[in-house]
Length: 250
Image 1: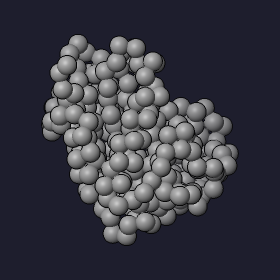
Image 2: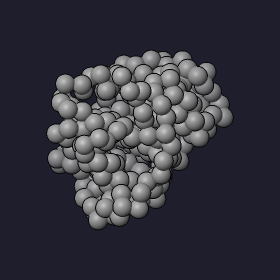
Image 3: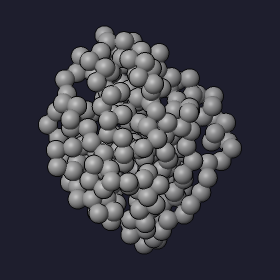
């Protein structure tokens, strides 16, 4: 059997998060093409709040968008499922596109693979973490990654006919920024949560930096297959620029 190959891309658009999401959408489309492989994009985002589909249908969505902007966070729409999540320069954004003949059959396996990758990465950095929902957490999910009572990473998933994308965020430092951004946003959306459950890796390992997490994750990925580094093509970026307005939150 051929060795599994995972392409790693580190390009991101921290000051244009709607464009960043559009890039993920293009890569998801490409993953459906014959002969396509896996692509894991790891990037350092800007200050932004990603809203999910359920958020956009909330009566308080427009107010939540304003609340995000007032907090200094760019609102945008996410591809993967889930509720509002905060990104900033102290986090690592994950977008993993995977070809699949029947994507619906492997939902739980892909969730587990992504969260396990995060846990193994953190273990390599000296952070003991586990997978599971944290009572009262923001953007709740069965595959959240936590250190004790604090959520430090979360993942969501989006399916197409023949591919899947797992999107997520690892909060390396600045847990207070996540809390400050999401308190007014969740209030506007009418969602109850416990702000103290939003943590960061730096709470456990002071001084840890996002680039360290990115490199450690790439190292762990090497235990799962062959890793190839690449950059986004001009065509991918050009196509994403055309559709970027679809992911602007208004």
